[in-house]
Length: 269
Length: 302
Image (cartoon, rainbow over all chains, first blue to last red; front, side):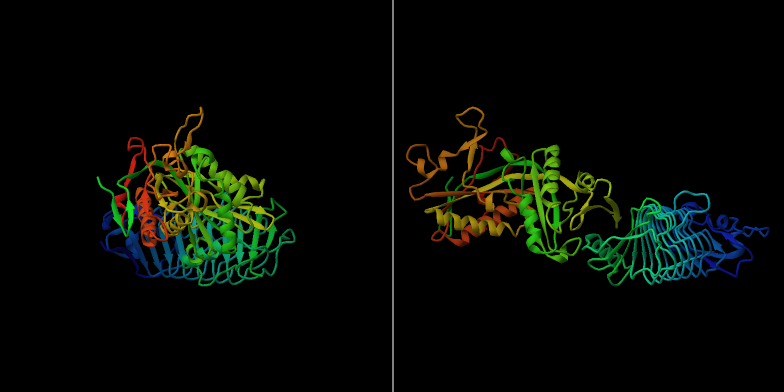
């Protein structure tokens, strides 16, 4: 079996909804039928065959050759298998994933990994705003799984996160980890304004002291931490980081005391 | 059947008889080896025999920093009991009173078993609402605030029903000192066998027992056949030159671990030789009718 490959023929004339092109939804489909699936989101109503050249036959191993910021909802709801985007992805890449592996070899748009519940989403480039965050009206953001951004993330990463691990390696925008319910957000490379704004529980792990922190965070000492050792070793073992992030006894700030106040921001002293 | 002699030591033609048990294991780590050992030794104190202690427990192996989940020195501790409920109770009491309290300690699962026992998921209540749940890489940890920082404890550990308790052998010598030297050599060798523990003080029991006794309510009593002071007055198992007998009791994660530990211990006694150590090796059994596991001494020779 060869990877089921969708090669982009030209820049799409409209935004595309690629959520029908997941391992689950393509299982058992003939290439002819796949090419007829409608993915265009405007009056053009483009079909798969209009946008991509389709080759290969293994729906558990899907490749999008050539990316575009118009490729929305890549691998949405995926439960297993692997999807790889060689190039950029649009909005909501890997939204509501439950398993499997999505790799974006480029940048992803806003709401990447939104509401993820499992699996692994990794992008080599940058992520837009609202990484892992809920869409308007939803109560919780990321609910499990691993989300890795090798580049930079926009504002409101891990907003309302409840479970799982998000790692951003080249810095994030403002309000990272805002309204977190629980879970772990790792940011190397600096954060913007007020990380952890209104977080209830959860851990925000930084590689340096945050430049601005909401005044409702309080200093909580820096005792030796086995948790820090476990996290550092896990991040290195998973190939997410090369060096320990927190060290033996990270500084802790507790908050956000404007709400429950059981969250933490940890960084090396 | 004749007894055999190896390196001048008589090996009785008999066997050890052992029983199925439930077992679990945890890994205790600390800032240094001293405190990892201290926590482990404290929690395995008063855990020599299920007859009076509820469980049998000891350090299985010491772990270098490279072999522990948090990169600090540690010990793998094994605990054995007759039933799952008692094992759970002993585990929580001992970790709660002896590991949670020990400076700088952390506690991890040490066994993947068919069933799980509660560990941090019960001890977390010490946190009084300030405990933090964390899932890292598929493992679930509880972080409980304590006065030197946090006690990190894995939520559960595994239980095995394949454990074996009561593997044993006797070292018999012309003097107490020689018996002790031989027994110590055996314990040191068994310490290198993973998955097997020797729960008695320093790994050695001097009051090997028989089942029951003449007094009502005694579960176990003196094994007079092996008591040198009674050699002349009872049907003794001891020859004229034997003045001290020590027993090594072995619990193992599996049947194979017990056999490996017996082999290692007997080999060490044989290598020490009859002049410095034991002149005879025997083993304890109940006629082969009670225990599920039989370890014939002639199969345990090096």
